[in-house]
Length: 169
Image 1 (cartoon, helix red, strand yellow):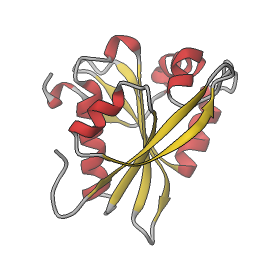
Image 2 (cartoon, rainbow, N blue to C red):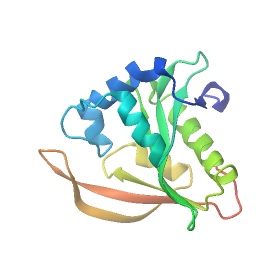
Image 3 (tube, rainbow, N blue to C red):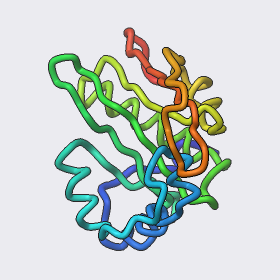
């Protein structure tokens, strides 16, 4: 999958149904360290909060179809750091969209936001952690029994990507 087939753009109202579906998918939310119960908050309200607290963009394919979103949040201007998050629809996973969207986000973080580090948290059993490692994120710690999905306590790995004069992988 070529990076050019995956794009980031501002969230549009036409994306709301897909984003709502992603937010109401309890299995997905639990994998993303999100809500253990269905989310009923309107997408527009959630987007307003997310935009106020950071940066959020829609991930699209070549046909401009919403595949999910990426976000940078809890940005610290003095330290030049932020936290990264990504959520893709099931049909978009395993096709290179996550890789491309992550690389594009890292490039924006470095060139447009002048960040020096991007961090993320990922459930230890989430296969996405392998992708993050391949892209240059490194594990810096594990929070034992950190995330409670209502049935099981899961370890959470903290990973970081340092911009040390190199561009994204």
